[in-house]
Image (cartoon, rainbow, N blue to C red):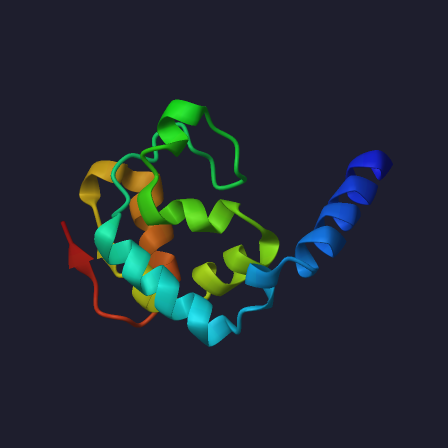
Length: 111
């Protein structure tokens, strides 16, 4: 556990120096919004919200994959209710609940 925390800290420090990590959150939100339109979430079965899952399922996660890049991107995406408003019902009940909760007060579109 201690080793994992130390590695996580090192990764976060490293990521903070990568140019894309320095983009303002507003720009990231615009990028994520665009990505959500061109690459919708199609299949998140077997993809836990903690980030575990197989590569085959990960490749079908669509825009939701941005939440698995780094903690900063995850924070921006999870706290952008409009991203979560288009809910593909095929994702299953657990993901539908997650999308609805993260959409907060935004009008929902059920697909």
